[in-house]
Length: 390
Image (cartoon, rainbow, N blue to C red; front, side, top):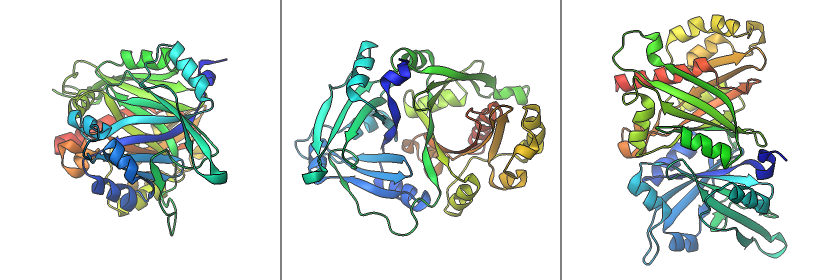
């Protein structure tokens, strides 16, 4: 049985975002993104863990946002420990697995480092009783941890969380569907790449390296980077990893992220949407900020796509619509194309260092399962322009 099948990841259960300002997160997820608060930490959980959490949900995407709320006699909460070392950011990613015992046996046989053994918790009541089984491990990505979950006969989020009333009105108005990929930055990718391969059983599926200086010769500063993408074939989840590339190692955006984050970490999470034109238009109306794309990107896009084997008559989206909204497009002769756009990072959005350098990406795939080398470069050049203008 292939490694990916033995681990048996079915998808992302949730990711845990530690923040200083819970109200600011509420405004972002509810008012801007149109997500609904689905669960909240119970009073007993707050007293026991010393942190307050709200889970926001859209489609199959769930983010648990936690702040420190230290009760008398409680241990220092994970949120407080994270925020004492880092700005706001993702400290944990949880996965639903097919068989928790098989996942445990697979990972421990490959030298994973468990934080605790499998916890088996009875949840629900009456005829709705079920089981929530989970364990967590450390990773080679700084302070980020992974949790593996098997839930049987229960539709709740996790023990210690209470369901909130269902939303009224339109649910998930932006059409978010699922997590597409999770991108991480490290000063050297080797440790995390090898860990994903040898512990998690993932495989490499893509790589690229470039300097933004390639398109502006003679610059004194720029961004150099190497990137590989690891993936889990069973679930289809992808994990791009970026590292700085000299001669602009210290000056480049990857190293800047690591310094701002106080270590390696999750740079962005890509969220799949059903209709990126409608989603971006509505989000802009709600005040969400995106990285800017220069007009000459769209001037050259048709020839670039054609050179890559994507004929214009195969493209559903109109270039003028993409230009108006600043959406990027790339493709391949086999898999057709994809469209994507990147939000401003939280530090830029809130003009505050402790908000952190994390950001979101929106993506709509029209057959292409890759990452678009042209768009990869465009992202980093857009970030560079933002930094120069700020």
